[in-house]
Image 1 (tube, rainbow, N blue to C red):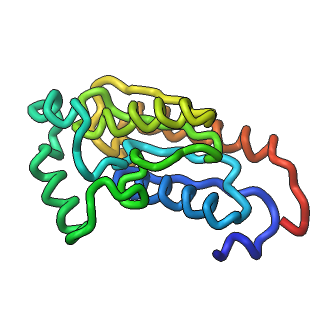
Image 2 (cartoon, rainbow, N blue to C red):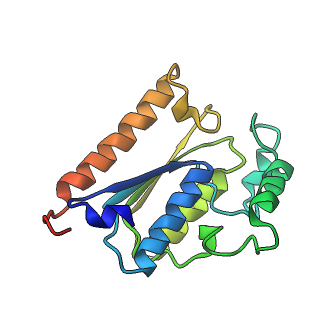
Length: 175
């Protein structure tokens, strides 16, 4: 992988489907014995393509972007005939031990809220330093909406989390 050739610490960031891919990437890095990221910041990661979290139904009328049906249709398009519980497609079903510290932000009214809450709970059970912040009154991917004060606050917290982890990481020129 490209980061193996580069010295120094690195971080992983992802939101929504990219957040799920970020967790899958961290699992692959771990499983291949590569140098891990020092931290990850995830925003509303989609980590359960089976859509089993309670928030899929509880927030169906509150989430302005997604319904459970939309999410399941998207999952089927991505998965084809593969199982929605495949740990690399749905990392909520993976062994999360050995992953780097992570900060997860999610909106209280998102259909994907429980993907985040369950990811953090499972990560903590596996011994991972995982922090969760549930934000009220924000839509999915609010961090991209620069006009929202909550977007600036969420991004600032994620940046501070990542900077702190990078500053604490050991550095060697050989990686």
